[in-house]
Length: 374
Image (cartoon, rainbow, N blue to C red; front, top):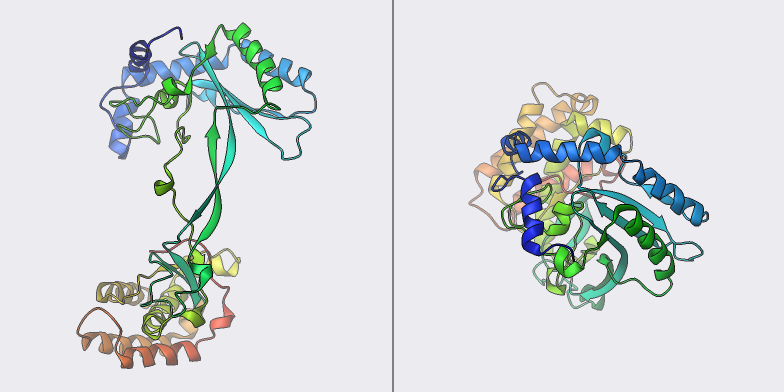
């Protein structure tokens, strides 16, 4: 190493303002007005004019004609993003389409190379998804909760197997020949050396670089590019994907909650112009988060939103169904007014939802899928 960590931090402080975060828009504007940021923008624009960079890419393409070399630094002339040149390199003659990533800093004489590896996890799912009344419900609760799922002892709900992709700085034997040839050319061209991971992952406590806030940025983020997960999380920190649960396997109590929510959100989405337009294009991806309990605050909030959209209805379907919707809304409002609080909805409210869903053409609209709407 040509520099100590202390010396690398001194370089970083020339290009990144200390103690200035990048969370709020006002923070970002203040950040961009600092002399450190102006210095970084100038460095990026100078780097974009350095002829050594395109010449390096040209030599690599000539040496490995069967590989794809992608220049990921086309944005540098604008002065935005990164403190390094960046390119990806597809390994020739590999059946699994492996790729190497190279970063060459232009503010310190170092580069790095890495690939991505898949790591398999087997974990207990802590959330699930169920489709009810044509709506996706995302449930941030365990599918083994007997209050929500009647067949909670089903083996399929006890574990989920999934893969996560993580950065690996240790290259395999079949990756090394290409990587070493490219590394020698990088070193000869820019007079730099490879930065060891134990140095690159050191935290910089008083600097932010989008998307890293104060205390999150590492040397790699500041000297090369931000946004990568340079350090894999521990198994306990890995977010486990949810599992699918069939609506027929839900408990009666949870079905009652979902009936009311499904009817409520169907009315809301029928009256929402953006949703109707998206549905017409087949591009509506929505859903609702449900924790197993019906909350008075949520019902009142959605009812208020529905009332705003009803005067007058702003969608063709809402206009055509105004009388029916008005009657359904008034009935629900009366039921909510007499409801004593949270938990399982009263039988009269569930009966209202059942009648509404039975009369509403549930299959006439595209089924929602993917991300939650609330």
